[in-house]
Amino acid sequence: MIDLQTTWFILLGVLMAGYGILDGFDLGVGILHIFAKTDEERRLFMHSIGPVWDGNEVWLVVFGGALFAAFPDAYAAAFSGFYLPFMILLCALIFRGVSLEFRSKHTSKLWRDFWDISFFLSSAGIAFLLGVAVGTTMLGLPLDKHGFFTGGLRDVFQPYPLLVGLLSVAGCTMHGAIYLYMKTEGELQKRVHTWMWKSFGFFLIVYLFCTITTLIRIPQSHQNFDRYPFTLAAVFLNILAIANVPRAIHLNKPGQAFLSSSAVIVTLTALFGTALFPNLVRSSEDPNLSLTIYNASSSGSTLGLMMIIAGIGIPFVLTYTGIVYWVFRGKVRSDEVIY
Image 1: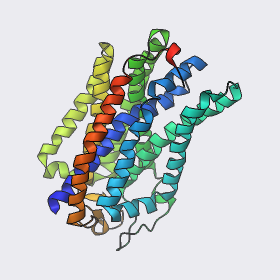
Image 2: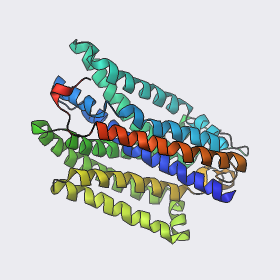
Image 3: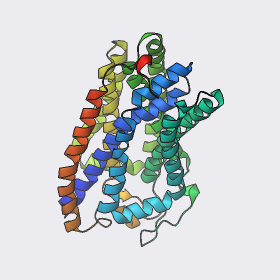
Image 4: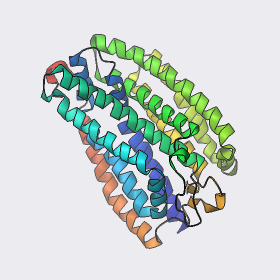
């Protein structure tokens, strides 16, 4: 039972990292979309993610479903605490998809400006709110003895979660800029090259500030690194991945920079999971009231059945993702734009 609970905790981290890598650059493109100079550039930006964005969101859907099935008590507490932010997040997800499909359906400047702003705000909002959720989970929520959320919005929108939300926006912007550089060419690519440097600098500043704040604000966050020394590998890999991003940009190796940016997301997810383990929803008032993988999980038979379903389903998702990216590989050009 403990092995199943731990395995599903790790699998949730894998799903979170997968979503961060794949939809992270989508969100970054949406954030940078507002800085495009011409209508053609904006259409190129949308076309660069048009064939893949909806498939990338599958990882978020699967993460939510897996959390609900594997750890229903934690799912209930999280959605109670984040009810309003998650409703805003749902609206942002809807508006982002609608913006992609509707923007170029009419030539009116007012029409396109509206959907451009909607695309930017929804992309930035999704990245920010997901980061806030991570920060609040680290900080903890007020829970009663039954695991029910007893607080309000003030317990969610605190300075630390807002800082983590900003880090999420910065990371997605950097990830999206690198992806855009690989998909564009000519004068636009030269401007995107500048954005890569600026977005990396923005990310690095927020990352350092967030790391220092975490160590001060949540001193227990490093306990598992002392308890499980092998997890320190995630710390070193995270530092190496961040350091390799500017190196790869300087050497004009965008593929390597993108892989390094993806590694940053994976290692940050690993650091978050290590700091949180075995908690799923930490109690901010009494650690004994926290919802953990042990007291918030489904039955052993349910977790075992889910492993079988995951073993069958995940290869299909990976195969579909690989085929889509292979078919739509290469640069995007104005004569091929359909968005």
